[in-house]
Amino acid sequence: MSVVSMLLIAITILFLIGNLYYFFTSKSYKQSYFCPTLFYKLFFVLVGITFGFAFLYYFLSFHEPVLLINDPTGEIAEQTFLDFLYFSGVTMLSIGYGDLVPVGSARFFSIIQASLGLLLPAAYFMKGFSAAAQSEETS
Image 1 (cartoon, rainbow, N blue to C red):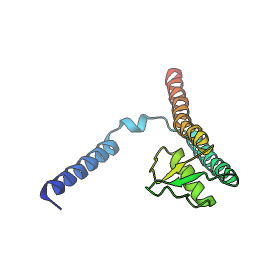
Image 2: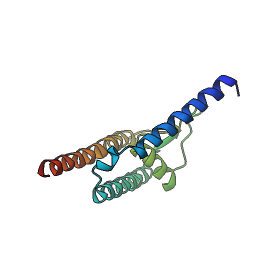
Image 3: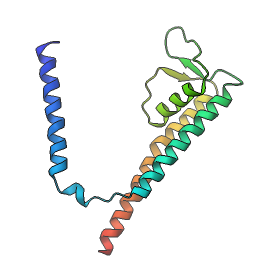
Image 4: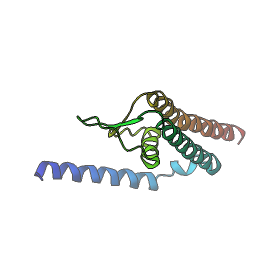
């Protein structure tokens, strides 16, 4: 490893440590609004949707290939529930590693799932933000 890359890694680590130190010593985060009920609700909704889409992909695989391996061979991926759960989780969290590619009707459903993965947390964030604003107005 070169000296330049070691230096850049060290600077990045120091930057991250500095940000974490500032966050935990700053008092501003203690005034933030966190609703555990809303957080757990979002968590379980996302887990439920992830499993629901995994089952959907699994049932679709009975009729046609649903996932291909993203390499020059373009082979059909294993059609197991765990592979569909992995793909569903990667799609839901908007990670999109690119190792598996949906084909056929699964393409439409993966777009719907990716949209839900982006919109649901935003909606819950806005709900929590509006609840915090309302509690500040009343106090």
